[in-house]
Image 1 (cartoon, rainbow, N blue to C red):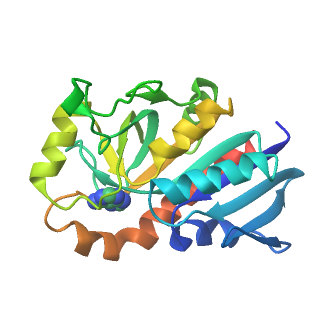
Image 2: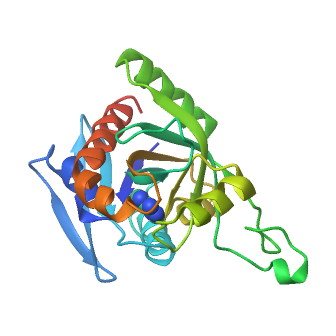
Length: 229
Ligand code: ADE
């Protein structure tokens, strides 16, 4: 690996990463800021994309094509779908899908368009490193399916649809788009989330309350993983 990308969606998701670095070079590009740092000699570019699949795709592509990153880690928060998951729990995606991609009118399955695939898998090698780091630090992680869509999910009905259709464990608004970009450009990637809410009717209150603490939990773990790369 030459250069590592670490991205989040929101400023609150990258602030706990940036807090670990003193010497930061900031580049403004495409109406966004890219923070270049060094971790024990490893070059890292950190950025938050802004919320949603389009901004996340732009940022992931920029980190790879403009900054030359050849491995990508994502850190942030998610809504729980799997009822075993509680606020602050860590989820590693082994595969991701787009729950709002829908051309079922033409007989295709949910989440599928021609030329694409319903599920994009993350790097097994990065997952193995992450699980080893979790073991060394006595962290409990769940490895599973993350569903992505351009919707803040705050209804049991929508959550059940996502659970039943994709067997998802958690949901958020960027991961699968980053997965499509990295998969297409042959860049190994890893998507980590810490639970901020349960994607039901209280989701917006819980999200506001737990965004910072869950983002911190995710960032702490992602930095430990980065140190092992
Ligand atoms: N990220 C964190 N919680 C979420 C939710 N309920 N819906 C979509 N993205 C989220």
